[in-house]
Image 1: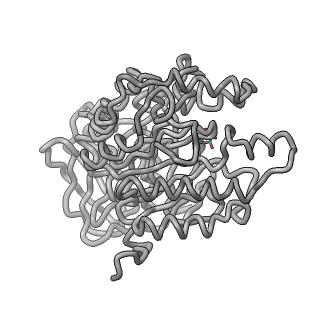
Image 2: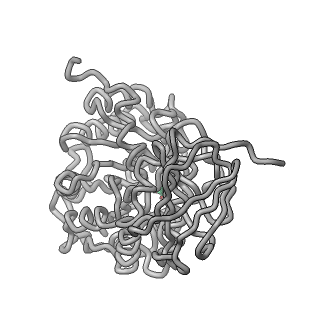
Amino acid sequence: MAKRDIVPYEDRIRWFAEARFGMFIHWGVYSLLARGEWVMNRERTPFAEYRPLAERFSPTRYDPNEWAKLARQAGMRYMVLTTRHHDGFCLWDSKLSDFTAQKTGAKRDLVAEYAAACRKHGLKVGFYYSLKDWGHPDWLALQEGRMTDHKRFLSYIHGQVRELCTNYGKVDLLWYDGPGPYDAAGWESKRLNAMARRLQPHIVINDRSRLPEDFSTVEQHLSHVQAGRPWEFCLTMNENWGYAKRSPYKSTQQIIDTLTLVVARGGNLLLNVGPKPDGTIPAESVKRLKEVGDWMKVNSESIYGCTSHPLQWTNYGRVTTKGNALYIHMSKSWPGKEFVTAGLKNKVRSAQLLGTKRRLKTRTSDVRMWISGLPDKPPHRHGSVIKITTQGKPEATPYPQ
Ligand code: GLC
């Protein structure tokens, strides 16, 4: 294969479908205001007033190795950083803008450090890039209904994607956002993505340049998942993407339940953190990520490389599958010493409670199965998983009406 040949879809998407769990990071000048990443827009702050904030964006405690270590500890396999959000502030040393970390308070290329840290800690490197840019003169003109030089604006956008795909080594994932008000023709997305793929033959691209590309994205609500292709659900840990001081957090249990639900439906979870302006991840997020990590240490086998299974109608929780194994996530309730499940066509080889050496007994009769030998109480406070190994790929019988 010639070096620049685009990697076939099945090969480039494999790691993504296997990974199932990643870290989303929203960080930029807006973090200083601690009211989320839409603050400039929501408070109608004129760009001229917002822009000088960048001089104060000097993240003295920024160490992306800490982010990466935490992601690893949580069991995540990839990271996606906002290289530039809608406000236009570039975390990298873009030659096409003066509103960059390098040219303002930070005086560093924060993206270069991030990409190096991801690789060092064995995480795939993801770049979020907002197509819209509230700080660009052509975008501002568009808002004011004046004539804009769309061609110039597009060459800026395409040029920035080129920089990101050229100057930071291997980039595994490109996560566009904010395409409104243009469609794919307006962004010239076909040409844009063809360029990204030429520069990064392995790259996996999301669907927000208004072309389907490699995977679909759903945000905050799981209702509109598009079946039949890889998808990723992105979720905030509190009520904001960017750092927000007063924002109620989800519990660790809710996060773990969401992860299992997403995998049981065949998708990935991209869980967000909003670091503080100094570069540190808020303590509330750290605590939750560590707890998720404790759960993953015992149960990650039921997450990585797993997908949905038709047998979901159980009394106890969601079901994921991989190879000849079925994983029942006992999250709704704990059955006690024995429980019944039904609907498996295959012969059962063994049953095991993940994280324990305990051998469970199984007894089957037609499509019913009794599993016994469980402890009275679940061994893991955030949900225990029972693994059932079957002869051949587990198949389900249709549910009776
Ligand atoms: C939305 C928001 C944005 C956030 C993104 C994450 O499109 O505009 O602030 O970055 O969702 O999915």
